[in-house]
Image (cartoon, rainbow over all chains, first blue to last red; front, side, top):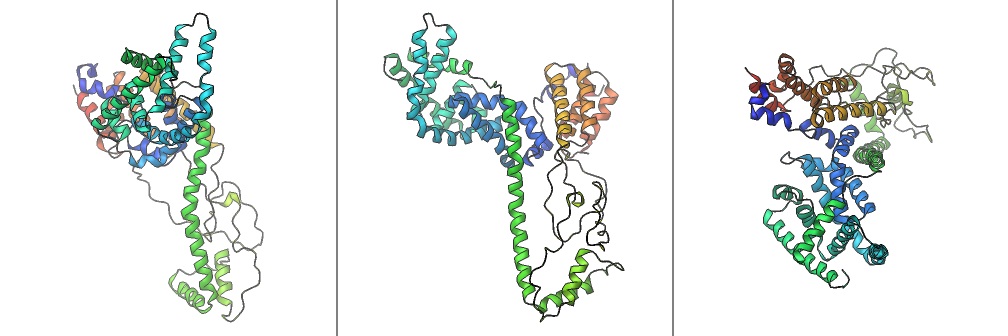
Length: 204
Length: 274
């Protein structure tokens, strides 16, 4: 085939994982339901995964997913096409997540007792399986997120949990790479201390 | 050791949280159900405010009497003469106002002027899915024809697809989009998704080509039609049907659709030269 001898053509043919171009972006900006539906179907899992990792609650994650996709038509005027739509949607989610996090902080103390439940469950299992241990570990990390600022938390999840590139991080967070690195480093330091407390038997 | 624990916890969080969710479809429906309300609010606010300002201003002006007659007379001099026997609601209202002496007190209570037309008369709202960014070569719509003669006080209801538009007395709020358009859009979207999956995941270009064609049949002016046309051209190239591929991609390269996929199409065409 002709394209097999042309790396450029091959690259072009392989490129689109999502509808691209001005027409789709304009349809999204206009709030066309078809375009928004397609955007949701192609990107909701990425946004939801980020929301769950960041917030640790399915209900909060779902709220953030809804909020993010509803904000797309209004936000599209800021889309300049210098990053993928997926990255752009994540930037909306990251921005909106701060509102959810602020609201959660107020409810947090009341929920802490309920969060001990997995540990109680852990105690009842004679031979806990690996999956349960890992879920508990993930849960501990999410509780330790409480010691972070919103910016540190979002940067840590995107950088360390989701392993996004520094270019993506800059697009999503709208901050220079050096700032993001500093946030992640500070977050890791705090998290090590928090997780260490848990290891020593203190409350994580 | 603590660093290892953090790394392990990070991996655990990554592995234990994904985006799969059984209620994803329900969330999608909630989002789309909430969307029209927000859009409507955005549309209503500026229009509503402008309309209210115009109505208040014109009412205050009308109360002063004399300027109204002068204004109407100037309109009659400037505007085209109404057709003979024209008794449409606008003309009726103008005539009634012009014949009212300035000293006359306004009628105590009047039924709403120019009652809003029934739904079938209202101008149809543009469908929500058919808006590709294509430079249209068709001439713009001509001026709206005059309203039908409204001699009888209660005209017969027009058929649903009557060509006569509503009288231009007041801008009627756009009716909601017809519900029957949604299943068609949904079906087209399903086909688009299938085509996309066949093309980019399964790489079954023959079936993908059929699916792109099907989508274009269902939504030839859909907001994703251009994208589908481009992918169709790529499929043809993948299948080695180069003449058809060039035919499909050349409009993009020529700039018939603006810069949309223009550079990509041009590069593909360049690369396809023997």
